[in-house]
Image (cartoon, rainbow, N blue to C red; front, side, top):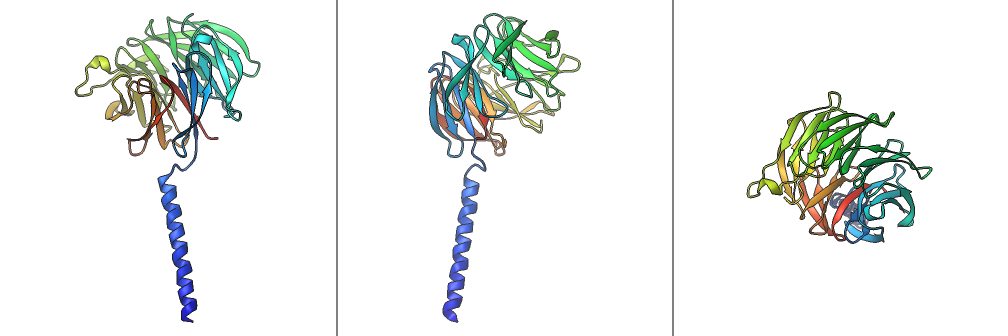
Length: 334
């Protein structure tokens, strides 16, 4: 009787130990594994990162000067803009290699897919146009003339408006996606680099690298309603250069990459106030959330690495070495 009781207690102790270890492992590791693709502008490669253990699992050779990068809606392919090759290359996720090319104008930089993933809008820096591409047919449908040195691209949540920012003209161009015509030009501060809509379509944010600000634009009125500025003790204002923007799905928090300031600003979107600065790698450029929004990954061009931010804790938890001059990043579930 006593032996049987001891055996029962031993089994219970083992079960508790195993269950406890499982819970500890679940807490110590990401809840889900996602795959990140990072474009390296100088080494002409794309680095593939497994977020399960934050390790590099593949380096893919691509064309010259890769920058803008994004998954297709079905997650089967990754588009990467190779500026010096004047095209958009297509990476097959299963094969982990370039399998196709889409036509583009000269020096494609950033691009945006429509909600269905059928139309790709590409900013071509060298000829001041936005190229429209039919993804399924791999065909160029036409071009929209915009300002000088177009870069930032964003589509409104309802799909009706495409935003393009022109670095030298210092404008955010509002383009009607149905007519493919510019319907408004909004003046912002010097060298606008990126645009991001709130999910509820109430605001669109445009970063101005040289101006050092974020212009908050009312999409309905098409006018700037607020400007967000940044101050970091010990740094000159010229070193604080906003570029990439990432907003949480609930629209409450935004993260802004501040370039050579080597910081990411955390911004309360209701008050438009900076609540915190996070020290990351050198010359932070662009960012992407994991699909569960537990982590935010940043590309740091000068230090040639990626910083991993715990979104809830608002803390940098990891640095991953990648290729030379990492520029863009996109993340999806495998």
